[in-house]
Image 1 (cartoon, rainbow, N blue to C red):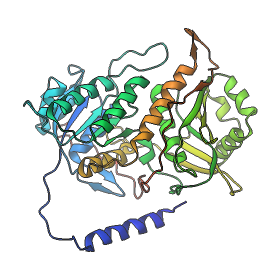
Image 2 (image 1 turned 90 degrees about the vertical axis):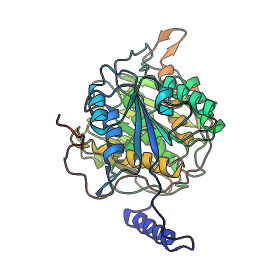
Image 3 (image 1 turned 45 degrees about the vertical axis):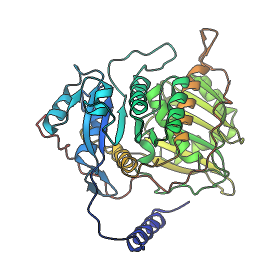
Image 4 (image 1 turned 60 degrees about the vertical axis):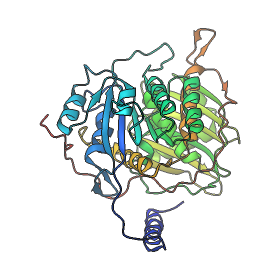
Length: 427
């Protein structure tokens, strides 16, 4: 595992090398990439659009300092425009045009693609939830409208998609496949893997992880995705790299603890997390809506995701050769909702994607996390009937194989002060 000091030292040396190499010459700063933002709803200070897009406009807190944005938000599309009153106010104050269609937002009202990147924030708004627990947000709909504009223009640009790709596996797979067919960088997922960590460590590639748990508030699809993405950000660094998922099973209610009692590795990791976080004995068992998702990887690695409280988001893993489990917590209130500190690391990597036109991590992780969520919810259903103790769903199509190449991506340094966004108007 790499310590923060080692990470900062390696980053500093890389920076010196880049600045002193043979190609280091004085250059005029390039034009900032222009970005189109496609939004489901931007109406309240707690909406993801406000947490993300305002930072892309005004800058964000990264590694102990406020960092000006290196991109320009050139256009916005609001799917639920009438109720997106805050988004309308921000765009008016900042002089950003709001377009009536996705296509116009991407072409800036012209006939061909006229932006350098796309940010999709299909989170929040008045959308139904189906019987299986899928929140029917229009991420795929906005994405396929975007793809149409790419194909008609004969070129594509980098894309960020907030949280999981879609509530539907076939749609999500299509979205990923289109990114490969049209050759554009695709990123997204949860903001939590980029949040502050205690201790400040990243697992080295080829860490011999044998079993893991991920803990967080996961009562529904949205919260569950965060815990899945946190899990994947750690387990993809196991020995041999990511191999994909063989099966998932979702269990709700008292059977959560019956399964834990007969699964020694899960019980050990849960107790290690409880002890590290100084929680009382029986803390996890006292939760009102217990659930656990059991994940088996194709290489035999085991994992479980628990709905938990007062843990922030926490990962615990058994590593071969180490006497005690490793516990890493992303704990702590993320700050005032007008600042939402947990979202600062994510806007940084969005900007990096748009500027470098490269994925900050392999997009197969995003697809894999999406698939785990989708098939976990499917686990409760068979032949139109619901069961709290879900069936084991085999997932041969979650066969993603890759080795992560990125270094640590989480936030470090001083936490940002509790200052409001520079919205350009008084709330």
